[in-house]
Image 1 (cartoon, rainbow, N blue to C red):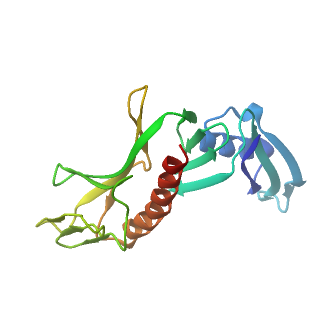
Image 2: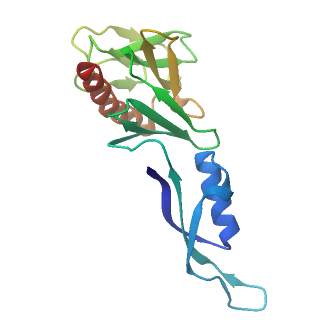
Length: 207
């Protein structure tokens, strides 16, 4: 069992706390557990002080021995049952059976160059920094290519593509919108991707 989205919410009512938690996980708010830490109270004629509510969702059927988060995608891994639970804010949660995983790719999709760059798979790891500057992309793997663009406002997203032996490939979308590659936020995303890259490589080695 995995306890999901567990935390204390400073909010106006128990119902609002449940709605907030439900929107994040995609599970029905009626299925959440919620304890009242502090009741809301009126502090003036037209003012009410928020209460504190401790809420969580109990996801049955799998345990998590590893968690990864890349932007909007929160991934829980059960390496015993070979399952991944993926949660994204505002989307329905889903499970992936990776028991027949044979390969993966960390893919950057750009909206300006109209190309995708495979920056990592089981045969090409993310080595060193992945840098996006004003002229384009330099992927820091030993056998990587250098792609030069003229635009200074390239927008891109990171996708994790899983390939299986007995079923169609599946893509985990990690963000709701594309990020400007010149911003620090994008560099933070790529730092998160390096951690995910290392872990997916370990999964393949254990297969």
